[in-house]
Structures are given as structure tokens and as C-alpha cells.
Length: 193
Image (cartoon, rainbow, N blue to C red; front, top):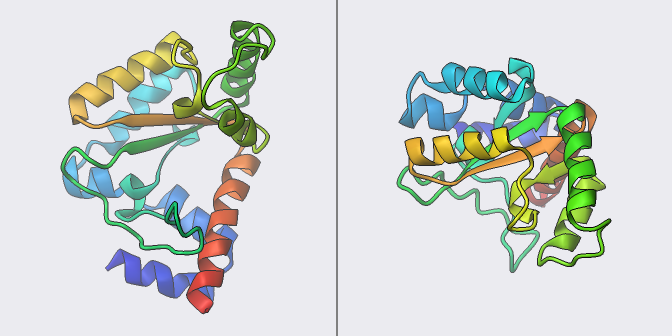
């Protein structure tokens, strides 16, 4: 079982190795078990539509691993490793590593919000992630779309797979890897206890 192997490797290996092995290189659970054989076409299509390199698209979250690496909301140190729900409940999270997309989105958002004067519900969440080199579509103002192409990709695959498709844009591989390494370090600490 992947979860038991992952937990064992959390104790044996450094976080950077775990991010590279489990999040970057391994096959995505969703495309291995649910939509078998569609991962290449999915990533190739997104790469083509967003004009990014195929290798700069990574499935993350429970859709990648088959279980979640998120801590519980009410108990931040508790990791239950919830299984990916193959029905319509679990989201499909897609990371795109592109400095060009990231910088363009920040500039458009700056203008769209009247130089950040307009307030929206998740402004602080967006700011916290942007400082970590990441833009998550779920924290953007409701009336703002990163790009027409990203919106179209999300809508197309939400319809096709009957589940939410979240797109996150990272400024660089440094930000992608360190963001996920920090979470894995927290998991390692909790597993050792």
C-alpha cells in the first residue's frame, strides 16, 4: 500500500527526496486507478493550452497520492491521510510551475483590484500564498480569472471528470518544492512522535 510505504519513507528520507519521488515523479493515483492511462493526454493538453512545458504540470494532493497530506483544520498537527474519494467529492489539484504565468497573474490581479484597494473574502489567504510563490485559484476574487485559458481548462476538466479542478501556479520549482517540503517536514515530526 502506498500510504504505508510513504509513512515508512517519511522516517527514512529527507523531505526533498520525498517531494521529488512522491509528488513529482510518481504516477497520479487519479490517472492510475480511476481514469486509467489519461495522465499524459491531460498534462499534454493543459501544457498546449497554457503554453507551458509538459514537465511543468504536476498533479498534487490526494489525486496524486491516493491520500491527503493536509492536516485536520481543527487539529493542525493531526494527519489522518484521508483517502482520495473516487466519487465526486475529492478535488483534482493541478500545479503549474511557470514564472511567466505567475508574474502575469499578479500584475493582472493588481490592476483588477484597483491596486489591492478592493477587498475580497480570501485576500489574506491569497497574500500568504503569493509570498510563498504560489497562486491558488480558490483564493482569487470571484469575478477574477487568472487567464481565459486557465478558466477554460478548469471548466473543461471539471465537466469531463465531474469534480472540482483546482489550479495553482507556482513562480518556480524552488517555491513548489519548498512549499511541499515544509508540509512533509511537519508530517515527519508527527510520525516520529
